[in-house]
Amino acid sequence: MDKTEARYAEIARIMAETNDYITPQIDYGIPFWAKPPLSTWLSAVSIEFFGSNEFATRLPYLLLSILVVFLIGKYASREKLPFYLPGFIILTIPQFLIHAGVVSTDTALMFCTSLVMLSFWEGMKENGNTIWKYLIFIGFGLGLLAKGPIIFILTLPPIFFWSLYTKSFFEIFKKFNLLIGIPIIFIVALPWYYYAEQKTPGFIDYFIVGEHFKRFFDSSWSGDKYGFPKQQPLGIVWLFLLGFALPWIQVIIGKIWKHQKNVKTSPWLIFLLLWLLWTPLFFTVSKSLIHPYIMPIMVPIALLSTYFWRNLKRKKLIMGIALVTPIASFLALIIGLSTNKIEYLSKTDKYLIKKNYDEKLPLYYYDTKSYSSQFYSKGKSKSISEEKINSLISDKVSFFIIIPKKTKLKSIRDAFILEDENKTNRIFKVN
Image (tube, rainbow, N blue to C red; front, side, top):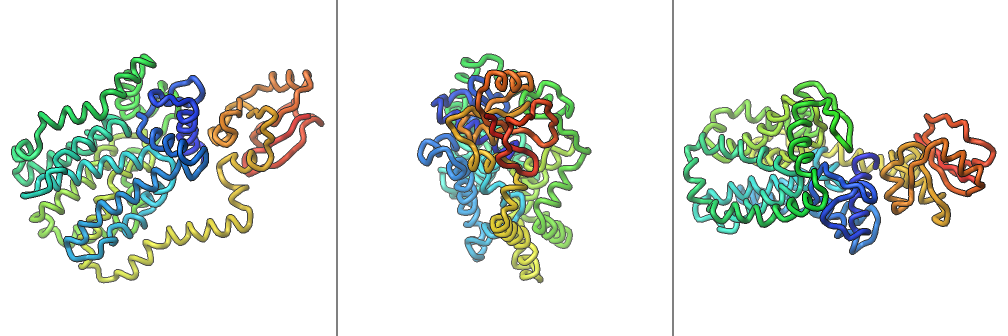
C-alpha cells in the first residue's frame, strides 16, 4: 500500500536485488538515510528465500508479532490465567493488528522495546534467569538498528522512574553488568553505523541530528528528504492512543481509577504504567508524529489488561467489542474480494501493473512514480515529464504509462489506449 508500506517493501527489494546490505536505497543509487536497516534486512532476507512478493516482505513482521505473543504469555500463566490471553488481547488491539502483517519499522521497534523492558523486569528479579541480563543489551543494540537512539529515549526514563519509586536504583548496577553490556550494544549496532557513514558520508548528521532532533522539535523541518511535514495538534498522541488501542486502554483507565490504592503498592503495576505512559508523554510536545508512534506500548496495554482480567465484570461484552475490528476487517476483505472493490479502491498500483503491464515494454509514471509501481514492476517504473512523453510519441516508441486521474495532459491523444483504472490512477498503452 502506498506510500509507507510500499516504500519500505521497495527498499527491501532493491537491497535483495543489489545485494547491498550496508546502504538501504530508496531507488537505485539513492541512499535512504531516514531509518536504520533492521526492518529492511528482515524483508530482504525473506525475499532472498521466498522471492519478491507481498508474502516475503511481510512475513518477518508477522513472525515478530507472533514472537511477542509467546513472549508475554508467561505473565498470564504466572497468574494461573490462560497462556494465550495476553495474545488474544494484543491481537485485538487495532494498532497491533494493523502492524502484525504489514511492512513497518514500528513493529521492529515495538519488539526491541518489549525485549528491553521485559528483560529488565526479569533481570531485576531474585534468582532470575541470567540470560535476561544480557538480552536487555541485545535489545538496545537491535533497537539502534531498528529505529536508532529512540530505543533509549523510550525505555530508560520509565526504568529510571520505576527504580526511584521502588528505591532500587543502585540495585540495577548490581544486577546488570555495564562493563559487559555496553560492549554488547556496540558489537550489535556500531559496525553498521560505521560502514554506513563510510559508504555514504553525511548519513550520521542527517539521521541523528535531522531525524531525531529537528523532526521532533520542528514539524515544518524542510530537510526531510523522504517524507513531508506532519502538522498535528499538540497532544494528539493521546487521541491516537484512545482510538487505536480501544477497548483495552479504556478498560485500563477504569481499573486504575478504581484500584488506585492497590496500584501504588504493586511494583509490577507501577512498572507497566510507567512503560505505558512515558511514550505518549514524550510525544505530547511534538507536532510531527503519526499514529504508529504508539506501537512500543502495545505490550504494557496487553499485560495491564491481563492483570485486571479477573476483576472484569463484563468479560463477554468487552471481548465482543474487542473483536469488532478483526471481524469487520475480515468481512471487509471478503466483500472486497468478491465485489472487486479492493482492486479499485486500494491505494496501490499492484492491480494495474499485474493485470495489464507487458514487461517487454517500458513502464512510465507521469510526474512522481509510486513506490508500489516500483515494487510490482521490479524497479522498471520510471518517472516521466510531459515533454519526455511528447518526445517518445514523436519517436514512435511503444510504452505503458500510469497517469493520476487528477492530471490533465495535453499529450493524451489517440495513441493512448486505456487499459485499466482504479480510484486514483489510469494505465495506458501507447502505440
